[in-house]
Image (cartoon, rainbow, N blue to C red; front, side, top):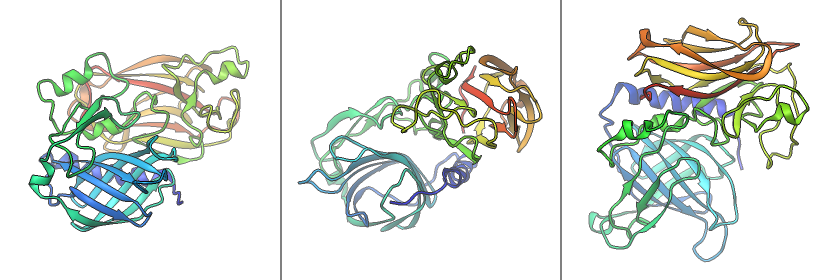
Length: 358
């Protein structure tokens, strides 16, 4: 198993999605639909429609081993994927991959997160159009944490038609998904769905971290109350960002109330997105030094709006007027460069009056 800094993975994904932003046609030079062998000993059944790619991978058809599924996007000679092991096998991992397209017959891992074992895929079989259209299909839920559902062939060569529900953008006002994809159930999935805006997927999908302040994020439930701090976090849902905290959840090996303190520093930066509306709001708390603990809206890499907490663990909603930047590409960045008392930041639940796009 190999692990690398999630930081580098998301930097590459940012580069991929930047290409998407300037090339809306999503032109593709490859079709990866087919059966592939990997150096992890598995067989992968891959399906591609437009720029969207799915796979089902298994170690063995006769023994338990591991079994995983993945979904992602193809841009040029790069594939960005989120993957997860499923209960058919005996593994329970999940993570992200960035693959380089060496040719129509070979794929190689550039970056990975989640201890994915495979590094190289070679095409075993290219499926004909008739094979792809043959009968037999199975309906199941999509990759955990993405929402929606998919109806598709269980493996390429056995399934008929494919349809999919759009992946909802988390942390949006009601009906945001319907607004984004109204009347077009087969619309190409926007890569914006790779970003978690409320952290309820339990990870930092779509965000790049630097330093060590965000190593144990997102935080699970009201950890300040668990450590007898009389200032509840006021998080939305179960997960939120709290750089003083050190409890990412019940399967982390850590305990409710654990903390890492104020000495860690770092940044957390979202993938780029295009501002479509007039308002962006979020929950913010923690320290109150605008110079060291703050959330920023970056346009052209420059902070144009900044907010900080009130030296209280309880988060309150802050709203920015972003109408001046409508149509511009932006990123959100959470900064913790504080040391000592109140040198931490709490952050959660980003909302848009109109959902952003790439």
